[in-house]
Amino acid sequence: MDDRRHIYKLHTHLKFLLKYKKEGGTVVHIYPLTAFQGVTFPSMNCMLATWILPKDRSMFSTIVYSGFQIGTVIGLYATGWLCNFKYLEGWPLPFYTFGGLGIAWAITWYCIIYERPEDHPGIPNAELRQLILNYESRKQAEVLPMPWRGMLTSLTFWAVVASSLGNDYGFFTLLTELPTYLHDVQHFNIENNGALSALPYFLMWIFGLLWAALMDYLTKKETLALVNIRRLSTGVALYGPMIGLIAMCFVNCNAILATSVLCIFGMLNGAVNSGYLCSHQDIAPNLAGTLLGITNTVGALAGIAAPAITSYIIEDKASAC
View 1 (cartoon, rainbow, N blue to C red):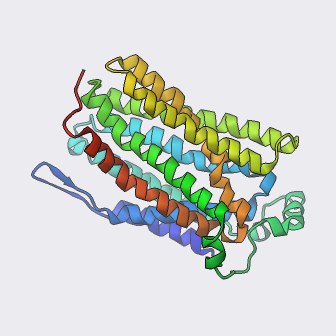
View 2: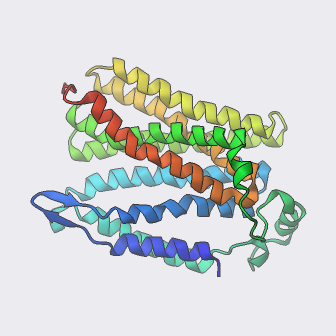
View 3: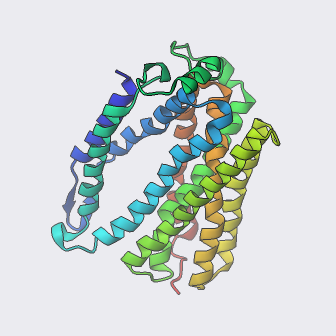
């Protein structure tokens, strides 16, 4: 049985079972549970590199990775809604709800997922033949040694690292600071705050799927080479939110304008699923999981740096409207 299936189950169960407590009004979080989430994206990338051909990766990678965005939408909206309940004082409900759903999904995953197409009893013969004919462009069954020197001297790899760092910095800035901004500056209550905080991610999800469909069409029509598909998608995903964050400096206390800017420019980040997130599979399908694990680790550093840098810049200068 595939090790990645066990990794998913272990992560989900630990996420539910790890406890937290409330002392003196301060919530004490158990941070190790987030460490187990680090294996999720590399595992998914291995599966994509194994099952999906290069010409189809923009569409299928977007379908898979857009779960991260729609999950954020559901999580932000549902958390605000659940916290309004008086049961268990409201705030623990999201933990138990999402933990329980995670266990249900882990059981489903354990039952239906196979490591390779050759092992799946229900795959259509035509699809299996196509995958076998393109064996060299997919992740192979053999475990290959990691070419560390070749990786560290590859300009393409470092370009992907830089893209990951820039994308994650913008994403985590939006994720961690947007609810605070809406509450402290624009004075939205917790329920409306959850809905408005989720709106950019909902639009990001919709735009990502539409963009992937367009890139899939251009790829199959051979209008653009695959490398240009990756460059264009990454450019839209990174430069769009960058412009939006700069524009936020000029919205002042106009709540409608602030929300519009965040939604319009934030949704452009949905193109990232057709961009550099597919590059690991294109560069080295046999090492797609390892490469994404490395670049995702570097990008995750932005999750630490973004709130700290934002707090340092703002300090006590933020003014409510």
